Image (cartoon, rainbow, N blue to C red; front, side):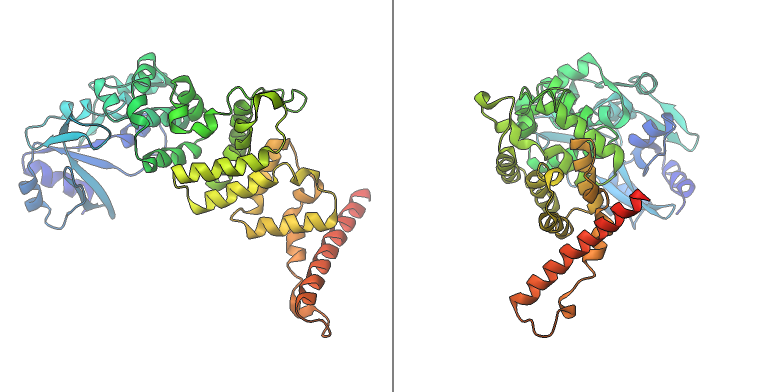
Amino acid sequence: MTEKEFVNKIRTAGARVFIVGGWVRDFLRQMPAHDKDYMVVGIDEKKFQQCFPDARRVGKAFPVYLVEIDGCHAEVAFARKEVKQGTGYRGFTVEYGSNVTLEEDLYRRDTTINSMAMELPAGKLFDPYGGARDVEQGIIRPVSHHFAEDPVRALRAARQAAEFGFILAEETKAAMQSCREELAEEPSERLLQELKRALMTEKPSRFFYALQETNLLDVTFPELARLIGKTQPAAFHPEGDAFVHTMLVVDTVAAETDSLLARFCGLVHDLGKGETPAEMLPHHYDHEKRGQDVLKKWNSRMTLPKKWLQGGLFVIAQHMRAPRLSKAGKIAELLLNVTASPLAIADFQAVIRADHHGLPAYLEQAAAIVMQMQQVNGGQAPKYLHGTQIGSWVRAQQIKAYQNFMNQSQGESKL
């Protein structure tokens, strides 16, 4: 079924159909728009089912149907109103049906830039709360008092600011701050979902700075909040405290790679500095060990993706050591350990480069070196070797492969 056929069926039934939410916002921003979300107004569920008998209901608390439109399974929701009666995102009663208006549905949404609708088939824009103006001016503004009724909207506003490079209106900051108490009780998986989306923005730091500014960082990501005020040696970190440094690193990694794992590892590489005793500052001796404990506790509080945990622990343990290695055996071992970790070599390089403003020669050429070392295998060992002797021989040959590569590379650089 084409979109035109879908719209005609709705209109023939005496109802109206709109594109709503992010697609409209991105259309006005002249940015590539993602999947269309449709909303129907002036029709009840029974009549909708009669019009679209093959549609599959996926909404539980309120009707959302999957309808095949233009070859895709698009979401079609009914206009609805919500009344907050409990706590958190489950504490709502929902009213929907043919009597709920477009304006009532848009009024319950989070920010003005997400509270616009485009009616089909003509494409007329409905913008009762000034979303188009805020898109043009680059402002995140709440539609109404309903913003604070779902506390995770505070994270979404911070993430939208990071994603679009928009600023938070003062009323948005106040609404976000009012979410503090309930946000502390939200299911961790909702926070993790927003963290993932924030890390994929052009400058993830905007998300965390927005949470810091609205006094929400310590109740959402306390491991990061504890970095604030942790001074560092000015000779190595003129940018300021450990939190500012971390924000610079995660933004630098984000500018280099789309890898979500690399960005997360950049975010957590210095977590241990948040636990440095005050009397030790501005030094952070053994923060690598403390950082691993902090990340494990973070994981126990908010179950992280397995690769995030493994990759984060590896980077925390190695980020100070990697640039300082000079012995061939230790370097060869580290490179092979990188390949055994969830991180791609490019991920590890991105984090170390961002943290140390460059890479040692061996790490710059890590991919080529590893390729040479991996050509060595136990089947090539002398026949008189057995058991652990074969493993020792392989390791020695891999070290030789590294040394030969570096010698050749240095020789070529002198030509």
